[in-house]
Image (cartoon, rainbow, N blue to C red; front, side):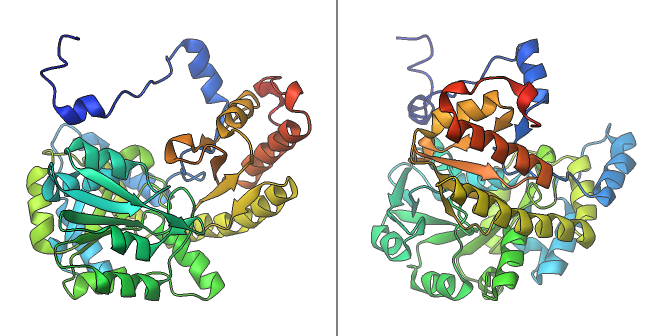
Length: 383
């Protein structure tokens, strides 16, 4: 028995360990040449306005940030048509997921979501000693009837990622509206819209209704909408996101958060990024165009690719995804193998800039046609 095994909490023991690669100089150098299409990051970076805003507050970094993020909350409330007390800004939307679980869950209670959805749901739920129930999927997305059937008297949260991560599938607004109306009163639905800007653009192109989630907030439903600045706004490294929901519930969550958890640099960048519509338009238009390029080229390699409403593609390789991802890494490209999501033959590929996507496709073609000859190193990545 180890020294602290009997001292730490049961969730800490049960979660297991995450083994990170050692940061040797050689690994750091190799990663600096890697095309990273594994974390759904914005390939264009932050907006110019956000960059200017960050520089403007660096000289005051000796002071603690505004713990309530008041200017940003007021602006978000104004843009979304809600009250400032219905907005909570946190260190990334994943931090708010954890706060919601700490606030609503405990041992003996549960949350419900779908299989093959955002992996952080499981981590956040298990950390507080609660149970995560995963309903079956339907056509690579959510089976809402199965989720409703899984809810019991001990359920307090339903997680609905829309679009879903890692499959990229979208639920139309009318379908979500009917689902929310059927939820029992003791359940809070978390409408996770981390990829909102991309999904809204795809929905407009396809002439479908994407999200009416804010209507649920305005009418006082037991719902929390999650948004983030990590994706379309390109601020992943600053860790800033927010939730919109009932003022009372978000007030309880605010009691649980760490003091001064959102830096002044992140707050300034987010406030400026909100109004840089030109930058967002560039990002979502590139994403939509390159999504079609990748869909076509990967299908020609006889991979099954799910059309996406986000900034990534879910790709069924029909073979061991971890081995394929390792081969791609040798070619200088990182993608996400989805074994931990329960999809061992699938990868998730971030949609990058055109030149990044072509390097990925070239590498995939080499692996597909000459699997035994892969491993020539990152020097071949531009061919």
